[in-house]
Length: 448
Ligand SMILES: Cc1cc2nc3c(=O)[nH]c(=O)nc-3n(C[C@H](O)[C@H](O)[C@H](O)COP(=O)(O)O)c2cc1C
Image (cartoon, rainbow, N blue to C red; front, side):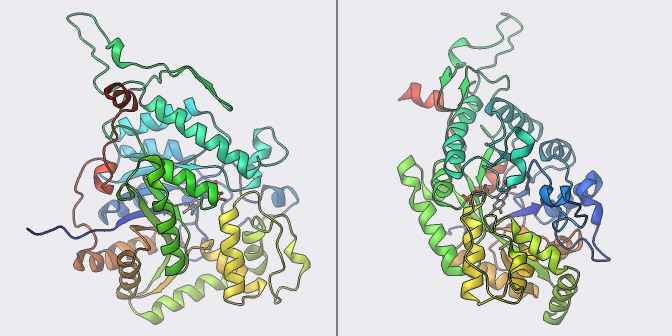
């Protein structure tokens, strides 16, 4: 009997990207729905599993801006609100998943559960929630706080937040809504559940006023890599987004996170770990290198330094010689795992502050792949086969050319090797990812 070869999953990462100053880059994608439609259709043509909208509820570097800075932190200054974008994109796409970021630190579970489940219905079961605890300090001041909530406290809240959202999504069992015109019965009272949740952070009665969706409930993605971030991923995530720049780090992370899932009664097969790759593809290696250099030349030292300022724990790097080594940083309350990547990269590769800052400004600590389609497919296949990844989050240095090139040149190479689909296998995001339809929590406990 022939066994189907394991295939990788791909996410197209959507956020206002770094190399916006290139002549061929569409610099206005941050505010352009039309550009996002093009991006979504390009990724869908390439049979990507999903789009993924990164988000923060603040402009990056708001503080610097308020002191008169006008250049911005490599363009993440304005952006469209991702849930609204998903609603629009659901109507112009058919197969691709639609994932948006929602913070558990500056949100309420009922609002968030309702919005994501609505998108799941609108898209026929293609929605996903990237659960984050917020990685930049700037958000706090927009929600009545002087400082970002403490890291441990954020994860404590996130865990309860998730439980409430998952219960709300299941508050109507499958088949609970009858709409029976003959009898006048609208729903089956035995299949609707109040939560009456009273916890440390939330008090929520329920039920949600949206019924179960075609894929049961939205897919959950998690992107925190600190200790509590990994634990939360093991408990909640169907997809894990991460930044790993060597295969051995990726393997350690993969083993560690999947190894924690048993504690929550989950199988490691039911999670897709997808490290980021920042792609600069060329038809020849020299074309790819020239493209990379062209991008580098447009990032000033000042902008590069600002791209790592959020990871220094408040230490002002401009007071240190730019060609000298990275000094000891202060602990970060915002993004602990990303700070560790920064420090490790500086130490292992012996980089100066200038070199490190430019590296981060390009790819925010993600693995950078510069080369031909065959080279990219080689690296992607290697990590995939060696237990470092189930797939990849594809970060584009600008729009739209890198994604178009990836779809035209790299996807066929992956397909030729039999490690990526040539057609979508299902209609929902869960089916395409290969993660199971979740049994309703209340049905399950009644059965037990
Ligand atoms: C690919 C990727 C995408 C991310 N997207 C976001 C995002 O959109 N918003 C955000 O606040 N954090 C984002 N993060 C950061 C984490 O989700 C997390 O909130 C942050 O790193 C702090 O948690 P940690 O210390 O556990 O890593 C992302 C991380 C990765 C690897």
